[in-house]
Image (cartoon, rainbow, N blue to C red):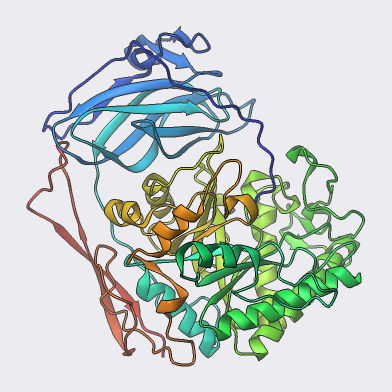
Length: 562
């Protein structure tokens, strides 16, 4: 969870004078001018003449919204492009994307002083007849020239069959194999937990039957989630030496062991508090939260020489904190437990201190952690998860393929609302950004996408993990209600704890024929070694949504771990 309070207001889309255009069977892109999508009752936007803009004009959206109308003869999938300009004297912006009034994700606009075209959504679904495509204010203030629709072309994944950690433990091999075997076939159920211990003064670890979020899901659906989210929130920093903080961390570790023993998967975040232990906070001042920390990675890392200032107090503080966390994770390794490890999350948002110094400093810190954890402390039970956004500079924040097993997207609807769409646009964008080289997951979210929507759209998130409290349970926004969980957990596409064989009985699956378009049962089989070919068909659709008869087939060589 970003712990970031948004002050974004909801803007409805009212009656409008909208341009309509019917998509024909031609393969050429279909361009829809922004000035033709201005809402009649929205006086926030400004149509501005410009010789550099298509059609001679663009729309300064400011606090307003746009709605495009387009008709298609048959239901199908399309790629949406956006041509825009955003002066570099400001900040990157995000706008919400809606299809027929339903959220379809977001479009991230990086700063540019000249008009440029970006892929706004890799895959959107339009239904037969007239469709409304909305560009709805989130952070606002984008100058939009036009959007274009092109035929959607599926591209293959090329995935490693072993985790990035050298000499992974048996449990880590099993966990990664399980993720890979089910990727594109089923989604792993999960939820974040708030409190891991009983309120008994003894910090007694909770169970599936007693922990608040886990019990809510089970009571609502009759099923238990596989993935249970934990946090090293109180394991380092100011106050971490207190009895309550230590009790919290101890209970978290014990409950993680319990989850693994039950056949589940523990996932750990780390809201890393000020490494100097001066203030109990992980926020930056720009987040708008108080208290906040002013800790800077650059006091420990020289951006010019690309070297760590090993004699600095800040570097020593970073190492101390990371060693504390590594020691906790080692207790799980010694117990035979593998962990989904998601450090330095949401860095590009810059509301946490590990992102405030920019991409280069954050990447250096991530790699330092990887080296310390693996090569110094001997941690080999971790599956490393990197959290990305969809901005143009997302790849600059990426630590690198050799340091990451899974790429995750944290997604919350703002303005906050219950919306169970598949988020296929975000899935495709993340896939494109990282070249299909990594498993993709919904690493943190509000509303859980409905399984039928994910399956139908090909939004093959590896797992989902709604945040705790009223994100996971009925509340003022009802992101996920008891009815939601009943629908999600009792769908064959969803893997629940009841489907798990137990890690002591798990047999390594044969991943030699992984293809994201395939559908299988439990995804549990006998492992075979050797060189394999990862084969996917690229499906090309025309603008009627019809698939061309001729498919191109691509091959990617991967090697099974010995």
